[in-house]
View 1 (cartoon, rainbow, N blue to C red):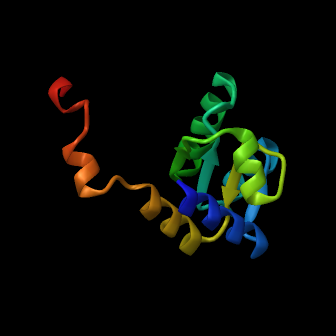
View 2: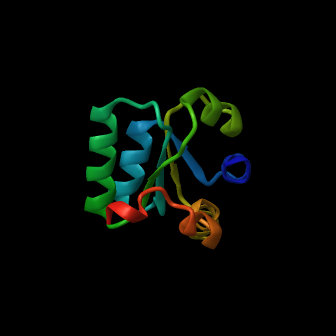
View 3: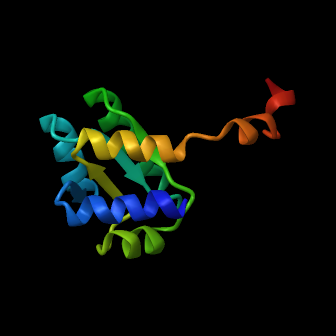
Length: 113
């Protein structure tokens, strides 16, 4: 998770991050966003709206296992939702968030499938 947060900070410093729901949704609607990212403690309504915007735009969206405060500290902004506007950064971030082979093998949900 720390690598993903560091990558988001780098993304902000490169000017490839849109902070907040309104700017993120606007970036998704305009085709500028490559990925929508949310903190785990955003409201259910905001999460639902974010999923809708991402689905409508045909881009991936993720919910990080981190708080809005920690996401804000990593990005240097106060926001629970951000849009990554660079495809390279988006790909690298999604790669960081993929479970490793070992994590897949140790999944507690395997017996429920």
